[in-house]
Image 1 (tube, rainbow, N blue to C red):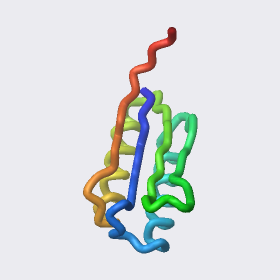
Image 2: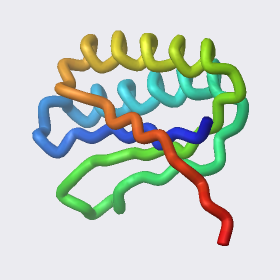
Image 3: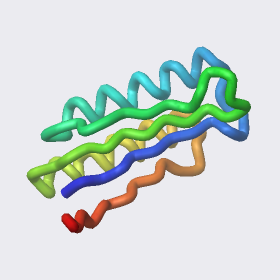
Image 4: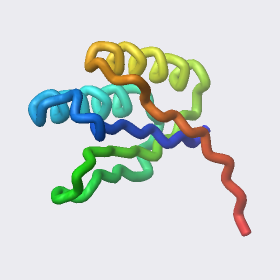
Amino acid sequence: MIAYISIGNSDDKLSQKEWSEFVAEVRSQINAWATAIHGAWFSEPGSPWQNACWCVEFTDETYAADAREALTKIREFYRQDSIAWAVAETEFI
């Protein structure tokens, strides 16, 4: 399973320090559960929005479920409304 995991702070709920910690904790959980990380993207430094996105692969459904649970706890701790979890369907053309 390939999933894109995205977080943001466009509503400025988090200070810069909290945003940095949020990113670090999400990255740590992704590293702990994903089989592979295919990419990581972050908003431009001068952008008015703070966003991050990772493309990750899970070869075990249990790991994916555990990652979702861990990310939900982190989201709640950092007072965020959501984390986007988009499962990709790959088609080779």
